Length: 183
Image (tube, rainbow, N blue to C red; front, side, top):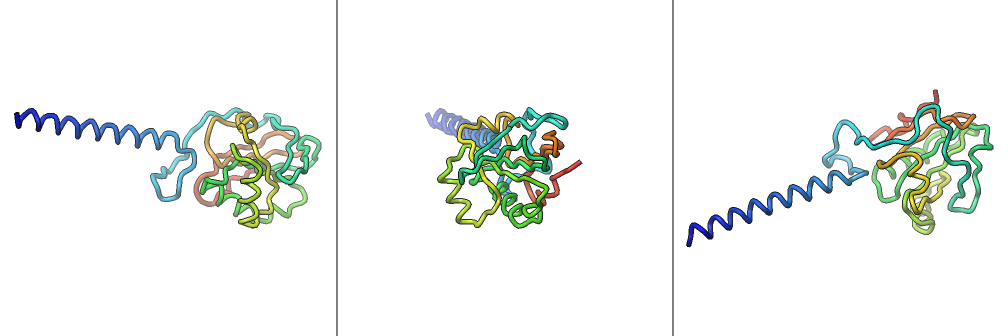
């Protein structure tokens, strides 16, 4: 009897360990934005990407959260498109750095940051709380994001004056603005 009880206890302990291990692996697999210092690998996660160097920017116009329509294909400026989420620490770091960078004042660059799966009220409150000056838009249903990649934020997409994609980077971690490439 005691032997059977011990076997059941050991078996339940193994099952709980397996369940915990599976849950941990699942959490790591679906995490698209990591908190610095918590299980961060040296290499960013790889997700399928749907645009590459030489492609035409797949969005023509977008309306900011303030109701301003930006026609990205009529502009003869370089474009910087940022795909982000307000809840993501890497996105917050990137938008703050961009907000404080000389890029924001460069008259030769149009910058738009698009919040993935968020609504206008949430993004406006986030912007106002942080004093963000970068033009912001929302992609509530992920229809814009799906034109670029399957996962991973924040993303920086640099586009030339002719609307040709120069580079798209997954900009996790530190020194994110160094991922912006114009040639």
